[in-house]
Length: 156
Image (cartoon, rainbow, N blue to C red; front, top):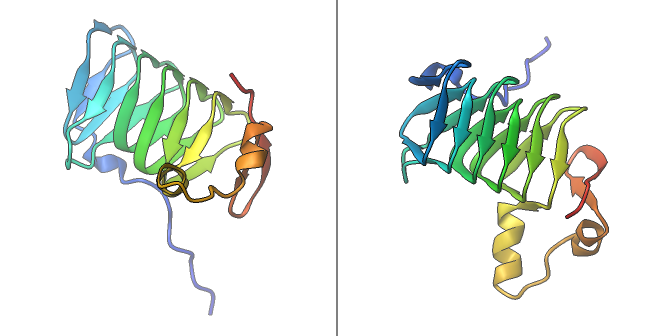
C-alpha cells in the first residue's frame, strides 16, 4: 500500500580507516575506501582517483586543508575548499570555511558555510561559457537547491 522512498544515505560500512579523537596528523592524507576523522588533520585530504572514497568527519574532527572525495558526511570543521564528486551531507554541527563544489547535497539546519556553493553540473556549464543558473542569487549570497528553501550563505 505505502512504498518507502529509496534512502539517499551513504553506505558507511565502507569505512576502513580512523583518525581517532586523540590523534593529530600533520601532512597530506590520501585514502582509498573510507576514512572517519574524529581527530585533527593539518593538510589536504584526498581520496584516490576512481576509488569512490567516503570521508566522515565527526563533530569532534577538524581538517585544516582542502578536501576532495567521492562522498562526504561532514559534522565537524573544515578550513579549506571542499570538493565532493557525488553526494555531500552537511550535518547540523558542520562548519566549512571555504568554497564547496558538490553534485548532490543534503544540508541540515545549523550547518554553517563561509564561502561559495557550486553544483558540479553548474560549474561545468559556467566553465564552458554557457549561462550558469541562479548566478545572480549566488553572487548575492543566496543559494537555491532543488526542493530546499533558499539558504543564506556567509560570503567571503
